[in-house]
Image (cartoon, rainbow, N blue to C red; front, top):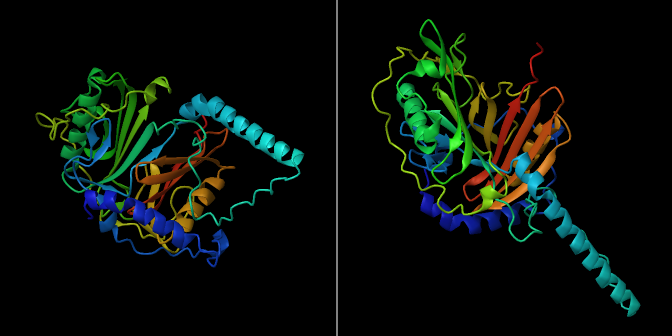
Length: 378
């Protein structure tokens, strides 16, 4: 696994290099019909983040777990809506200024040439969607996708202990998995933790945690799970969107515990998986990983796939095409730290929802896909 410091130092160089390589006009655009359904075998070692890696608001990858791929960081619909009027005003002002310059140039007999659209094949992320305003809002939602390599019971308890520290008023139970996990004949089927509250820095958060051991009936893990349980952590700011953008420097100043106190009293056990599903398995809503994309991690519940791709253009197209299976995507681009994240979203009235984030970073090109099936009819 590459050292974090090396990643940061190399960030700008790699980003520039990726843009230069993938912007080559000789490279044909990819299409769904031209992509083979046979994915590339995954070598995940270059895409792992180990224990103690920061996630958000002081939360860390717990000991016994490994994060696969980058953090998925995006702006919520509420945050986008809060800043949309400001963005619209900035764009209108720019358009008015451009029209004024064109009118003055024509009056002086020296009309300005029409701007030439910048050619693009979709391989390079666009500018931050909110770049026209002075201080573009930072992402307020973070998702970490993790594989549990140690004791699932202790890893889950460690993560719950961290959440309890960040949100002390949530009053989470730390010593009984029966509070969070459904079990049959003592064997865990699935675990869900949900907590809302305020941090010591007065941030209102909703934190959800899901742990999926795999398909208990067939004893089969999702692709790239290494026959281990999968853990998904989502941290969402739910307070006033604009207030959440102010004084963020100390949001992560929390000392989370390395271990949970006491012992688990549930007497639950984790079912053993015999094999991972092959990388050609249909996932999400029938989607399959294409050629050139390596599955870093995937899950049945919630339904997600984390992919690394050989080129930036493919990661972007995979994300866009996947969301397009549900509806016309909305798009939001975030430039943050040494990464550029492009998030596509589509949702139907029946609750079916697809979200995909294309991440261009120093570590590589990623497509992080999420799918929520239609709501069940009562």
